Image (cartoon, rainbow, N blue to C red):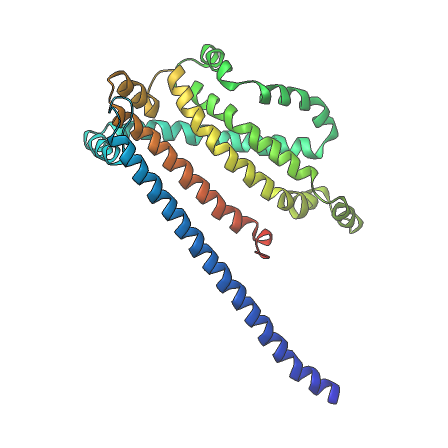
Length: 281
């Protein structure tokens, strides 16, 4: 009876202590996030102030400054050119990026789990990965024409390899002991994939997707330069030819914003999809 009473009295104490530590960790994490947010805000303000000062003291044909870019963006939104070009580039980016993600994940999972597939595809994939994709764009234009198809293929090829390589690495990094434990409990190959291989590979897959978004944005502009000039690439070229530097920077800043927002959303998705990696933080 005394042992039971002692255990009953100690359990609430342990629970309260655990809750207090958890609350302290949560408060410390919240303060850290606020501090990081302040640092990011201060860095942006300093960069914009220096940019504004330097741009106003430079030849407007050679460089520009943030307030001029904002004014140019307002004018381009008013006349409709920015929104039309943005919709054209976003459609190409979305289709090519999704195809690149799906193809990269599928091939990465296959090569990571199959020795035969790895032996057959390792050298061709490495050869394509180290090849400058810009050098292949003229050939892709000959194959797929100057329309949207060629642009989508270019974006897909630019974005597929970071996803493929990271997925393949994630599959190969699965703990062999966990695989043996799963097999000892008579786990089928399907359940092994669903319960172990894919969840263990998710952090690597998300890292590959985050790396691919930057390459996909580059691919959109490269494709629009080499194929039928349209979208944000058209705005850059046409305004550069008329020496309207502020209007040239508008699509560039838009691309930066798309990259930052996409990366932030992917970070949030990574936390939601694989929360076990962040429980200790």
